Length: 226
Image 1 (cartoon, helix red, strand yellow):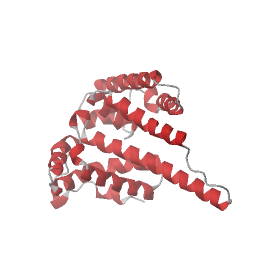
Image 2 (cartoon, rainbow, N blue to C red):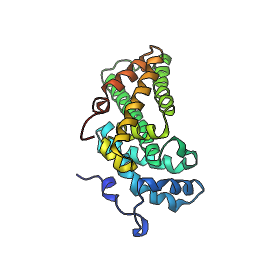
Image 3 (tube, rainbow, N blue to C red):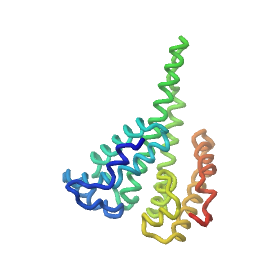
Image 4 (tube, rainbow, N blue to C red):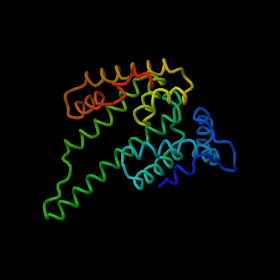
């Protein structure tokens, strides 16, 4: 079954041309100044990629649609905080989508565990302060590590890791030759691994390092088709 999010892509309000990803920055800047129609033109370009990120993480079309709606509302509400020097509008959108989807997975999982305990008439313990700190540090370390990358490296990593795009697709989207795209991702992964290796041995740091090693992108940097 085709998601309505996928079906809406390709048409902009009033039948105007759908903006390319590289054309979104001025529209977001206009939206930040209160131009509501400007963000309506952003929507058809980012909706499907945002939904795709959410769906890959959540594996549930219903949850993915809810998260995608939340992401677009957040983008519209916080357009003024967008900083182009930290990456493209698409990078910004996919980053928000990933964080929202991960938060939703945790909420759904926690709710399922609570329901199971209630059904079993067992205690329903809340997270300990230590567990809450670990989760907060996990998100903080990832965001801090990404912030240390160049804008070009950050954009390439976000498109590959959060967006699920191949190296060749990233090259087409960013209008950068394939070779430099591979180099950006390789150098970014090296810097990210180094950032987590320097960190303490907290569980969140160990999980982040394991995630970087397990990321398929780190094993296909030299793939001919990428």
